[in-house]
Image (cartoon, rainbow, N blue to C red; front, side, top):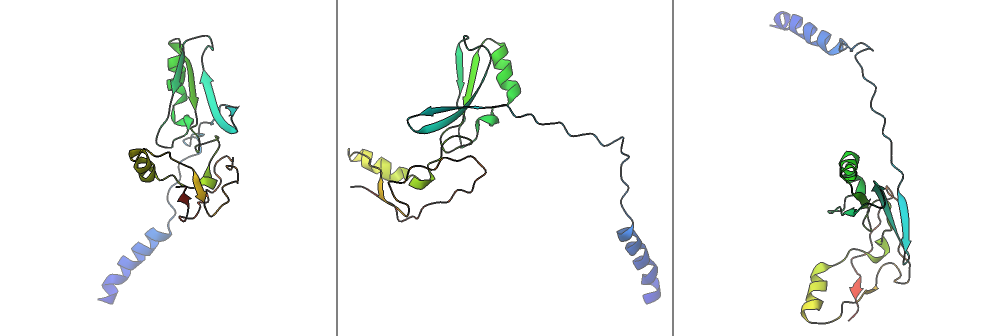
Length: 159
């Protein structure tokens, strides 16, 4: 039985040690170069909002608003250019806490249920007053891919 298995093992070992055939260098295509468009920064009320535009600034404006925490670059350049070719001044931007715009990590994550509860009771919704970070600490302005430290869940809303 061992003599029968020996040729099979030799064939399997030979397959494992034989290098895979490599394509010729002529068949390997050079990857396309990525050219990043420069974005602009609007400084308003202590908040930086990154934005980009396509087309004639005197044309009717078309504002593209990206949702779900995606950056403005999720709007494809070719799509934006096609809209601009149809006579629009296309503007895309990064929402706050996204991409190159200002982030508000020092304030922690919002609690929408608490906000809805306060609104239902017809009370004003107030900013958090006690957090792991000082409430007087200004929001951290950064660009990605910085890590996003979160505050403690011990944050409380003012009554």
